Image 1 (cartoon, helix red, strand yellow):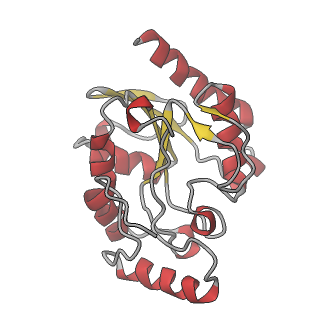
Image 2 (image 1 turned 45 degrees about the vertical axis):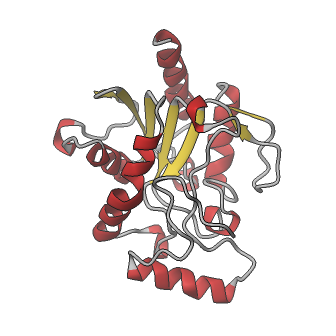
Length: 222
């Protein structure tokens, strides 16, 4: 697989976080047909300049993005996310939990705050910080036309705030909150995980409403 030359995209053999690197090495041996590498940013096929929305997740799921190589693809969270994006015009086609479906992003890009799958889906602080400085911040900076950012969960939200050079205490996480952050507006949401939806912490209506407000904001700022 060729190395992605875009700023902010890690090499397949990134070793900056030894624990995550070893975890991936173990899974490469166990499941050699899986992607098992830092998951790249998912961008509009028409070009990154088409994206006005950036969606930030926490990290790849072990049997989701880590298996398929595309954010939120292969697990439950992707179904709710991509159905919502299609409904609000941020994507077209059909999501079928595999990378050879017909899904395409049109007005959005998706990235994880931590690019490699962590053990038990729990990255540690040093890994979050390392990935932010090496890859996440440069990724945000290369998207010239991003105006809105949706952060999925507290860790993704806090890493985004720090990547923008702001203080977390001035931009706390709260589901449904909207906060201006320089040239961006941050929209916060609980993560669209099966756990959150099964427990009722996040309903489909709550999640869809976040993106309704994002679309309204982008229309009003045209």
